[in-house]
Image 1 (spheres, rainbow, N blue to C red):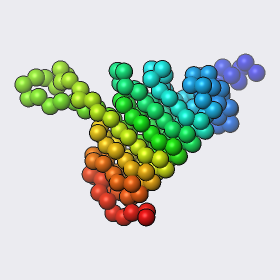
Image 2 (cartoon, rainbow, N blue to C red):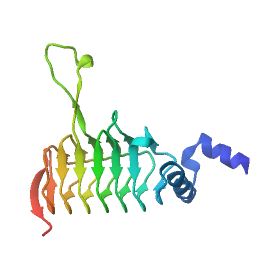
Image 3 (cartoon, rainbow, N blue to C red):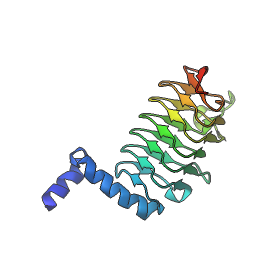
Length: 181
């Protein structure tokens, strides 16, 4: 038995999905006092700045990285699929579905031609996502964006400005193409 456990540690892809889900439930209860599932292969830096609502599922290889003293709040019944990256000050409502490889950054580098790039300060902002939002694969959401309740963000979109409730947006930069109402 220990041999199988050791191989699972050496080769994480050999750990069966059901075992990761089971251990992910234990991780959520231990780290966040939440009735959720957080994959053992997801990375959460500064967990004391992260809140995760009940029945939320965070799949493997998702990175959650709050910046400085700002936190990341994830509501109830949310799903964050594989390879997502959330960084900064982010608030996610209830029932939000986030597909694979979604990237959210609530900060940006300043652009000052008088100083070298590696010395540029960060401009901090916030990302707010309303309830019942669906975010497609490979979406990038930048700082100071508010996405309204019930919105749909199409795959591959880059969201640089606010999205009204129930709007469907696609493209780079994301533009309204329809509404769910």
